[in-house]
Length: 229
Ligand SMILES: Nc1ncnc2c1ncn2[C@@H]1O[C@H](COP(=O)(O)OP(=O)(O)OP(=O)(O)O)[C@@H](O)[C@H]1O
Image 1 (tube, rainbow, N blue to C red):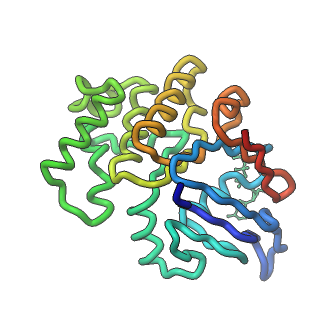
Image 2: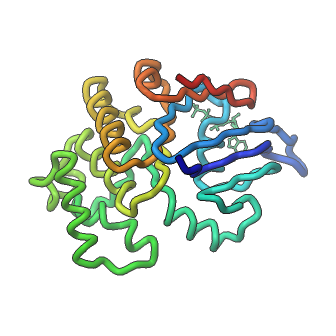
Protein backbone atom coordinates (compact mmCIF):
# COMPACT_ATOMS: atom_id res chain seq x y z
CA UNK A 1 0.00 0.00 0.00
CA UNK A 2 1.39 3.41 -0.93
CA UNK A 3 2.50 5.87 1.69
CA UNK A 4 0.53 9.10 1.71
CA UNK A 5 2.11 10.88 4.68
CA UNK A 6 5.41 10.67 6.51
CA UNK A 7 6.53 12.75 9.49
CA UNK A 8 10.08 12.40 10.78
CA UNK A 9 11.27 14.07 13.98
CA UNK A 10 8.64 16.80 13.71
CA UNK A 11 8.87 19.48 16.38
CA UNK A 12 6.65 22.50 16.85
CA UNK A 13 7.34 25.38 19.19
CA UNK A 14 5.39 28.58 19.72
CA UNK A 15 6.65 31.89 21.08
CA UNK A 16 10.24 33.01 21.14
CA UNK A 17 11.52 36.55 21.08
CA UNK A 18 9.76 38.49 23.83
CA UNK A 19 7.43 35.62 24.83
CA UNK A 20 8.76 32.35 26.22
CA UNK A 21 9.34 29.61 23.68
CA UNK A 22 7.16 26.59 24.36
CA UNK A 23 7.64 23.36 22.45
CA UNK A 24 4.33 21.51 21.98
CA UNK A 25 5.50 18.59 19.81
CA UNK A 26 8.85 17.05 20.73
CA UNK A 27 9.71 14.86 17.76
CA UNK A 28 6.83 13.10 16.04
CA UNK A 29 7.32 10.15 13.70
CA UNK A 30 4.25 8.99 11.81
CA UNK A 31 3.47 7.21 8.57
CA UNK A 32 -0.02 6.97 7.07
CA UNK A 33 -0.80 4.76 4.07
CA UNK A 34 -3.61 4.97 1.53
CA UNK A 35 -6.79 3.60 3.06
CA UNK A 36 -5.68 3.99 6.69
CA UNK A 37 -8.46 4.80 9.17
CA UNK A 38 -6.82 6.27 12.24
CA UNK A 39 -8.03 8.05 15.37
CA UNK A 40 -5.93 10.75 17.02
CA UNK A 41 -6.62 11.07 20.73
CA UNK A 42 -5.03 12.93 23.61
CA UNK A 43 -5.87 15.25 26.49
CA UNK A 44 -6.97 18.82 25.85
CA UNK A 45 -3.96 20.97 24.99
CA UNK A 46 -1.76 17.99 24.10
CA UNK A 47 -1.21 19.20 20.54
CA UNK A 48 -3.77 17.34 18.41
CA UNK A 49 -4.87 20.43 16.47
CA UNK A 50 -1.25 21.55 16.16
CA UNK A 51 -0.37 18.19 14.59
CA UNK A 52 -3.37 18.36 12.26
CA UNK A 53 -2.36 21.87 11.16
CA UNK A 54 1.15 20.63 10.36
CA UNK A 55 -0.17 17.67 8.38
CA UNK A 56 -2.69 19.96 6.67
CA UNK A 57 0.21 22.18 5.54
CA UNK A 58 -1.41 25.11 7.34
CA UNK A 59 1.64 25.52 9.58
CA UNK A 60 5.32 24.65 9.14
CA UNK A 61 7.26 22.54 11.65
CA UNK A 62 10.02 24.14 13.76
CA UNK A 63 12.18 21.12 12.93
CA UNK A 64 11.83 17.77 11.21
CA UNK A 65 10.39 16.58 7.93
CA UNK A 66 6.88 16.35 6.48
CA UNK A 67 6.38 14.35 3.28
CA UNK A 68 3.03 14.31 1.48
CA UNK A 69 2.46 11.93 -1.43
CA UNK A 70 6.22 11.38 -1.64
CA UNK A 71 7.06 15.08 -1.80
CA UNK A 72 8.97 17.02 0.87
CA UNK A 73 6.80 19.88 2.11
CA UNK A 74 8.58 21.08 5.26
CA UNK A 75 10.58 23.62 3.26
CA UNK A 76 8.13 24.19 0.38
CA UNK A 77 6.88 27.64 -0.62
CA UNK A 78 3.34 28.76 0.25
CA UNK A 79 2.28 28.29 -3.37
CA UNK A 80 3.53 24.70 -3.46
CA UNK A 81 1.91 23.92 -0.11
CA UNK A 82 -1.42 25.32 -1.30
CA UNK A 83 -1.27 23.29 -4.49
CA UNK A 84 -0.41 20.08 -2.63
CA UNK A 85 -3.13 20.75 -0.05
CA UNK A 86 -5.79 21.14 -2.76
CA UNK A 87 -4.63 18.08 -4.62
CA UNK A 88 -4.12 15.55 -1.83
CA UNK A 89 -5.97 16.66 1.31
CA UNK A 90 -9.56 17.09 2.43
CA UNK A 91 -10.72 18.73 5.65
CA UNK A 92 -13.70 18.18 7.95
CA UNK A 93 -14.15 20.33 11.06
CA UNK A 94 -16.29 20.18 14.17
CA UNK A 95 -18.45 22.96 12.77
CA UNK A 96 -19.34 22.36 9.17
CA UNK A 97 -18.23 25.76 7.78
CA UNK A 98 -20.66 25.49 4.88
CA UNK A 99 -21.26 28.72 2.99
CA UNK A 100 -24.77 29.85 3.98
CA UNK A 101 -25.70 31.54 0.69
CA UNK A 102 -25.04 28.41 -1.39
CA UNK A 103 -26.94 25.16 -1.85
CA UNK A 104 -25.65 21.82 -0.57
CA UNK A 105 -24.55 20.90 -4.11
CA UNK A 106 -22.78 24.22 -4.63
CA UNK A 107 -20.98 23.78 -1.30
CA UNK A 108 -19.81 20.31 -2.36
CA UNK A 109 -18.46 21.84 -5.59
CA UNK A 110 -16.42 24.55 -3.79
CA UNK A 111 -13.12 22.58 -3.69
CA UNK A 112 -13.13 22.52 -7.50
CA UNK A 113 -13.10 26.33 -7.51
CA UNK A 114 -10.59 26.47 -4.64
CA UNK A 115 -8.25 24.32 -6.74
CA UNK A 116 -8.44 26.91 -9.51
CA UNK A 117 -10.62 24.78 -11.76
CA UNK A 118 -13.89 25.50 -13.56
CA UNK A 119 -16.94 23.45 -12.69
CA UNK A 120 -17.76 21.02 -15.48
CA UNK A 121 -20.53 18.52 -16.09
CA UNK A 122 -18.39 15.74 -14.62
CA UNK A 123 -17.94 17.73 -11.40
CA UNK A 124 -21.69 18.25 -11.05
CA UNK A 125 -22.22 14.56 -11.63
CA UNK A 126 -19.71 13.66 -8.91
CA UNK A 127 -21.22 16.18 -6.46
CA UNK A 128 -24.69 14.71 -7.04
CA UNK A 129 -23.42 11.15 -6.75
CA UNK A 130 -21.70 11.98 -3.46
CA UNK A 131 -24.82 13.63 -2.06
CA UNK A 132 -26.87 10.65 -3.16
CA UNK A 133 -24.29 8.35 -1.53
CA UNK A 134 -24.94 10.00 1.83
CA UNK A 135 -28.73 10.05 1.45
CA UNK A 136 -29.06 13.72 0.52
CA UNK A 137 -30.06 13.58 -3.14
CA UNK A 138 -33.41 15.18 -2.37
CA UNK A 139 -31.70 17.98 -0.41
CA UNK A 140 -29.05 18.99 -2.97
CA UNK A 141 -30.77 22.31 -3.74
CA UNK A 142 -31.27 23.31 -0.08
CA UNK A 143 -29.17 25.84 1.75
CA UNK A 144 -27.36 24.77 4.95
CA UNK A 145 -29.90 26.48 7.23
CA UNK A 146 -32.61 24.22 5.79
CA UNK A 147 -30.70 21.07 6.84
CA UNK A 148 -30.30 19.34 10.21
CA UNK A 149 -26.93 19.29 12.00
CA UNK A 150 -26.24 15.72 10.86
CA UNK A 151 -27.22 16.55 7.28
CA UNK A 152 -24.97 19.63 7.30
CA UNK A 153 -22.04 17.55 8.50
CA UNK A 154 -22.72 14.98 5.76
CA UNK A 155 -22.52 17.76 3.17
CA UNK A 156 -19.23 18.92 4.74
CA UNK A 157 -17.87 15.37 4.58
CA UNK A 158 -18.63 14.85 0.90
CA UNK A 159 -17.29 18.34 0.16
CA UNK A 160 -13.98 17.11 1.66
CA UNK A 161 -14.06 14.16 -0.76
CA UNK A 162 -14.99 16.15 -3.87
CA UNK A 163 -11.42 16.46 -5.24
CA UNK A 164 -10.65 12.78 -4.49
CA UNK A 165 -8.07 13.52 -1.78
CA UNK A 166 -5.75 10.76 -0.61
CA UNK A 167 -6.05 11.84 3.03
CA UNK A 168 -8.92 13.49 4.92
CA UNK A 169 -8.12 15.31 8.17
CA UNK A 170 -11.12 15.47 10.47
CA UNK A 171 -10.94 17.59 13.64
CA UNK A 172 -13.70 16.32 15.97
CA UNK A 173 -16.12 15.79 13.07
CA UNK A 174 -18.83 14.48 15.38
CA UNK A 175 -18.11 16.78 18.34
CA UNK A 176 -21.10 18.99 17.67
CA UNK A 177 -23.65 16.18 17.15
CA UNK A 178 -25.87 14.18 19.53
CA UNK A 179 -24.52 10.69 20.15
CA UNK A 180 -26.91 8.86 17.79
CA UNK A 181 -26.13 11.23 14.91
CA UNK A 182 -22.43 11.12 15.82
CA UNK A 183 -22.41 7.34 15.42
CA UNK A 184 -24.24 7.58 12.08
CA UNK A 185 -21.84 10.21 10.75
CA UNK A 186 -18.88 8.17 11.96
CA UNK A 187 -20.23 5.05 10.23
CA UNK A 188 -20.44 7.12 7.07
CA UNK A 189 -16.77 8.13 7.35
CA UNK A 190 -15.92 4.45 7.60
CA UNK A 191 -18.01 3.55 4.54
CA UNK A 192 -16.45 6.33 2.47
CA UNK A 193 -13.00 5.17 3.63
CA UNK A 194 -13.80 1.70 2.29
CA UNK A 195 -15.59 2.79 -0.89
CA UNK A 196 -13.17 5.47 -2.01
CA UNK A 197 -9.96 4.12 -0.42
CA UNK A 198 -9.35 7.51 1.16
CA UNK A 199 -7.20 7.58 4.30
CA UNK A 200 -8.72 9.33 7.32
CA UNK A 201 -7.06 10.84 10.39
CA UNK A 202 -9.78 11.67 12.88
CA UNK A 203 -9.35 13.68 16.08
CA UNK A 204 -11.92 12.52 18.60
CA UNK A 205 -12.52 12.72 22.33
CA UNK A 206 -14.95 9.80 22.14
CA UNK A 207 -13.27 6.49 23.16
CA UNK A 208 -16.11 4.47 21.58
CA UNK A 209 -15.45 6.08 18.20
CA UNK A 210 -11.66 5.73 18.56
CA UNK A 211 -12.18 2.02 19.27
CA UNK A 212 -13.87 1.68 15.86
CA UNK A 213 -10.74 2.90 14.03
CA UNK A 214 -8.00 0.59 12.70
CA UNK A 215 -5.29 2.63 14.37
CA UNK A 216 -5.33 4.67 17.56
CA UNK A 217 -2.64 7.33 17.73
CA UNK A 218 -2.35 9.21 20.99
CA UNK A 219 -0.38 12.30 21.87
CA UNK A 220 1.06 12.53 25.35
CA UNK A 221 3.70 14.93 26.58
CA UNK A 222 4.40 16.03 23.03
CA UNK A 223 5.11 12.50 21.77
CA UNK A 224 2.99 10.20 19.62
CA UNK A 225 2.14 6.67 20.66
CA UNK A 226 0.87 4.30 17.98
CA UNK A 227 -1.57 1.82 19.49
CA UNK A 228 -2.23 -0.03 16.26
CA UNK A 229 -4.68 -2.90 16.12
N1 LIG B 1 -0.63 29.80 17.82
C1 LIG B 1 -0.26 29.41 19.04
N2 LIG B 1 0.54 30.18 19.82
C2 LIG B 1 0.94 29.77 21.02
N3 LIG B 1 0.58 28.60 21.59
C3 LIG B 1 -0.22 27.80 20.89
C4 LIG B 1 -0.70 28.14 19.59
N4 LIG B 1 -1.49 27.13 19.15
C5 LIG B 1 -1.52 26.20 20.13
N5 LIG B 1 -0.76 26.59 21.18
C6 LIG B 1 -0.53 25.81 22.41
O1 LIG B 1 -0.12 24.53 22.04
C7 LIG B 1 -0.69 23.54 22.91
C8 LIG B 1 -1.45 22.50 22.11
O2 LIG B 1 -2.62 23.09 21.54
P1 LIG B 1 -3.60 22.28 20.58
O3 LIG B 1 -4.69 23.19 20.20
O4 LIG B 1 -2.81 21.67 19.50
O5 LIG B 1 -4.13 21.14 21.56
P2 LIG B 1 -5.33 20.10 21.37
O6 LIG B 1 -4.78 18.77 21.78
O7 LIG B 1 -5.85 20.20 19.98
O8 LIG B 1 -6.38 20.61 22.42
P3 LIG B 1 -8.01 20.49 22.45
O9 LIG B 1 -8.32 19.02 22.59
O10 LIG B 1 -8.37 21.27 23.65
O11 LIG B 1 -8.51 21.09 21.17
C9 LIG B 1 -1.56 24.29 23.91
O12 LIG B 1 -0.83 24.47 25.09
C10 LIG B 1 -1.80 25.62 23.22
O13 LIG B 1 -1.96 26.65 24.16
